[in-house]
Amino acid sequence: MTEASITPVETFLQGLQDRICAAIETADGTARFVEDRWQRAEGGGGRTRVLRDGAVFEQAGIGFSRVQGTTLPPSASAHRPELAGRAWTATGVSLVFHPRNPHVPTTHMNVRYFEARAEGQAPVWWFGGGFDLTPFYPVDADIRQWHQVAHDLCRPYGEGLYPHWKRWCDEYFFLKHRNETRGVGGLFYDDLSEGGFERCFALTQAVGNGFLEAYLPIVSARKDTPYGEREREFQLYRRGRYVEFNLVYDRGTLFGLQSGGRAESILMSLPPRVRFEYGYVPEAGSAEARLAEYLVPRDWL
Image (tube, rainbow, N blue to C red; front, side):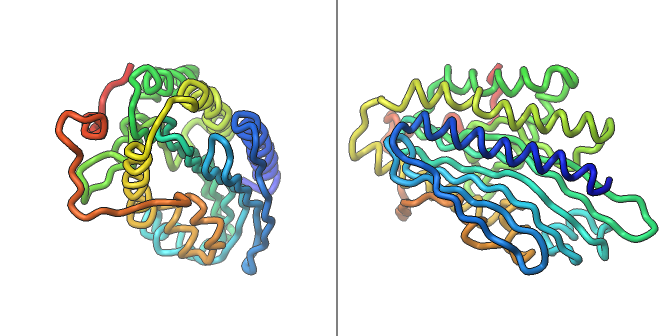
């Protein structure tokens, strides 16, 4: 691939960030995103947008970046050792939304494109991304709606795609030290190049464009659900699992930090408030104990 192939991806990603920001501001009703533009010394830059202290979202962060480098960080070179010594470009949009109401799930979405080049050799490129849902008080209908959208956007590209990417999501967003999934899953894919650039780009656009269709109905249904201090404290405790995963396992976080990325933008995925409690065990039979039943892979459709 060349600059001519990177440009339409970048144009789509910037437009996707704009559309999601507009939709989330409308859903929140009070707060607005503040943009922080930045440049990276080694090459590239981005625009990080964060909405804080809204009526619905305690914090919503969504970033676009396009960065370049000449040496792959360890997290990437270990994954693809054949790329050592190649110059690279990575561009993507990544978001994490932390709602205020514990009955509205936290969510994450990422779509990205990576390209590595070396003189006299064909470029190596691929797409990656997906979205996943992390409820604190799960509602089966919400989870089925989430997975139905994921299934439907994959369907035009093959019936086997959704179950494959759904299983990949369950396996990737898994906290081994807790023996539980981060949430109820969704889609995850990486190293997507099969079928050519146009097919893979179209698939990635479908994932990015499908996110709001999957998430906004859940926000609308749950944002006014009453809650008290008990539910809020449980939400803050469970947010700790999000911190654990992002700092211990997430390849995107590791890539960003190891490649000299902007720490503020990389770590905007972390919740604004969180608590840890030693040896916490929810009361048997409680709504909080029920969550454990959902933190194992399940066929939602």
